[in-house]
Image 1 (cartoon, rainbow over the protein chains, first blue to last red):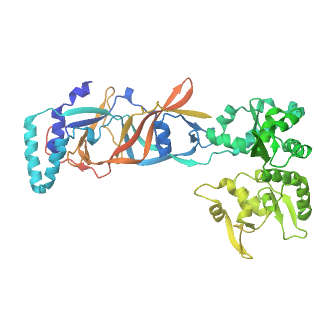
Image 2 (image 1 turned 180 degrees about the horizontal axis):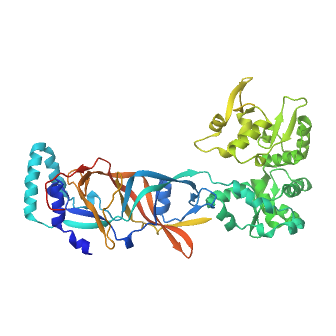
Length: 426
Length: 111
């Protein structure tokens, strides 16, 4: 409190005068900036830039979450978006002053504003004269200036910059990999300590809740007794076969699958939660008849999965034979098409006979450089549509697949088709 | 690992301000207890521009709306758990980017 008494209107006036400012030109409030005593300084404060979305979240009082383990770059998550965090530096100093008054709230009233408007029309010479006179008058008037003290809470040279980014979801599969569900008879062999609840997953994956929920559905994680699990490939095939076999058994047409009958018929063979989830993954609503909702299986999804089953054993297959076997494996009425193999298999049409082999995106390295290396080792030249499924993962709004290819591959034209090959040939 | 950023309930986030200066302020000495005065901030009636008298320098600045708002967050340690609390939002700053003008005077007494 002592200091506050030390600085009076006179002190401030003296400074105004020595600074060759004219009190009459200033609004009536002077804010004295000060560093508060050490006990009131706060060095636990951080500044963070906000885009419009984050500002809205904060103003609405929503919770944000920083996420990341010690070996990861932290991200900030809202309920549905993920942001990358970078620390930015400035050579200027940023003084943080709570409750600082801006010009509008320092006694700039209507009359003052009007006066200054009039003064604007004066010539500069006159103006400086009048202001000189005025300042002299003011000094005599000695109306006390309105002096307020404002604390500088802290000085900053850095702040956090946030950029919207893709959620980092590749970790999710790795977390769930060790506990794949292979059927009730094999449950004894699963390491129970590695089972993860939703909260445990959410804690470890750098993603917002909404983005994580979407991904859990996308990779077909199923909640089995509080824990999220992936189905082992062979087990998924088993359940899907049960589902598809019912079509024939009941002579259903493809768009009139009864969910009720399906669940009822298979309840002894497959745990209910898995059955429900699998039905949901592979079917969509079709028609409503007599108040009953019927379903149809997603044709492309079923065909792709069955193609993977056929391609599962290592090695190359004769393309013609494979396509025939594939057609035979899908339920009657579903159509297989070579285009469905994008991202799960590669076709070599230059060899005789033409061959096809399984090549799954999930099995490729995560690092983009490594991945491109493997891709070009597997096949020297790719068209955009061929390679897209394998690198889409890295594409962002700003950097699409074409931009990725420009950066990591060499473009050329082969028989009039644009193809991409390795940047550095051996 | 998650660190929560808690926001005050709706509508109650105060707006604070930044004063941006070139370089940094070095105080000759800071008081052990109690505040240390840095400078006087005034506004011109006419232009509404701020002017800051800082030691023997006069700085002319202007009020600038931040391109992106900033959150002021406080790190809180509660029961060994770190969290952040949004204390305020900064939307405007006073920017003093011009070269400081020295005060030349013959005043013998100290200010």
